[in-house]
Image (cartoon, rainbow, N blue to C red; front, side, top):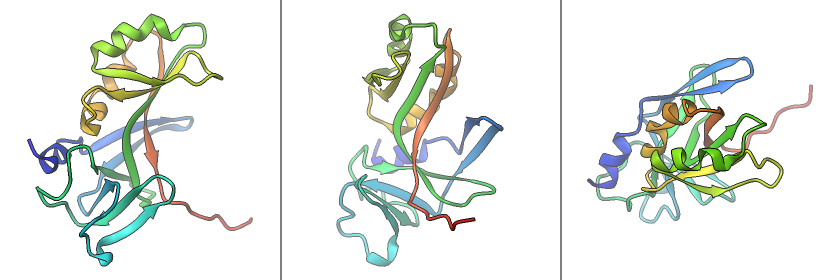
Length: 168
């Protein structure tokens, strides 16, 4: 399966749980992102670059042979907010405060994830990465992560372009 076929397998939408309820993000068919140098891409195809993250958001859809597997990233946006959000493949997973992360390690690994990082300030939380390295694999297993015993939160890492807010 080439990179374009993998990219097309990403879900058409993802639900993000917020304090004021769930927000549904829809996959953009008119934008895609790449990790690393854009290479032979025309400058007019670049929508924006995420400074410091080595990710470019491009207009259109990718060619089947344009990028290596893992370099194509899906772009999503909400209905009320059209700002593009790039999904990196990293998932922030948190257990309820009284549970140790080790209690869920086997279940996390059985779903195809590895624990990439445990924040020192939150030992009941972790950044997870899909063992396959494929963003779509991570997104397709969000519901399963959220259903694990003791799970309090599981959300994909979303990167957005910087935006400046005007002072009120």
